[in-house]
Length: 259
Image 1 (cartoon, rainbow, N blue to C red):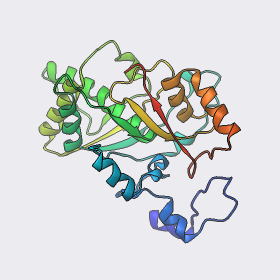
Image 2 (image 1 turned 60 degrees about the vertical axis):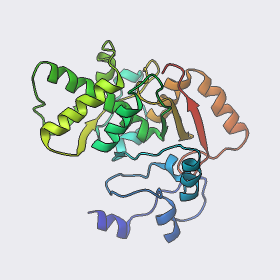
Image 3 (image 1 turned 135 degrees about the horizontal axis):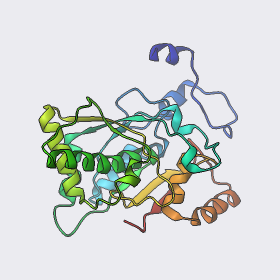
Image 4 (image 1 turned 180 degrees about the vertical axis):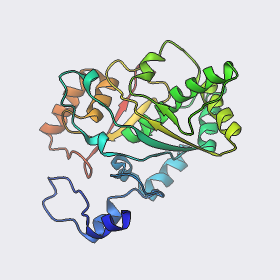
């Protein structure tokens, strides 16, 4: 099926790029670090990160780790419901190596935790989902139980239901590593339906680099969760200064103040 799509499909360029997609776009509309097929779209915040950018980050002792979320059509489904709680978020698969989970745990081993910056809404949903999946496993392991499902699953509002449990990153990541060890695998495959809305308390990420999103999108809800009503000022500034929105657009950096 993917071969058919590649043969007859077109790269979905943003509407402000008033030209047809070319063969060059097949390369440009993809991150430099992409490895696996499966998403319906590229994680476009990552398009800002060339090899030269990664080299410069490394010189500043800023380390990079990679996670996978297979973006589905649900990510782009506009919020049409009258209230947020009536919107149904589609589940998406995440794919995270045990080494990445171990690295996250190591960052919180002492009293000097490092700053974690998510590149794109895709990454922030993946990293935050790991925390809540870790809580699920922590409770099961505490009661000497094991996960029955072959694929772990985080439902849409489960993070808010679990919010009363204040576990550390070290505890939740260790629970995930114990789960992987019990399954004899080095790769966590799970489904997340996590919907980040205003009021969400970020557990893993300190900052987000992302592009500018369209109205009535779940992606804009993530920005509102980080900034509150300040997102309106940010977006007004972007519109007044002709910033580019969407896939080939400009990037922005937001800091979490509740983490």
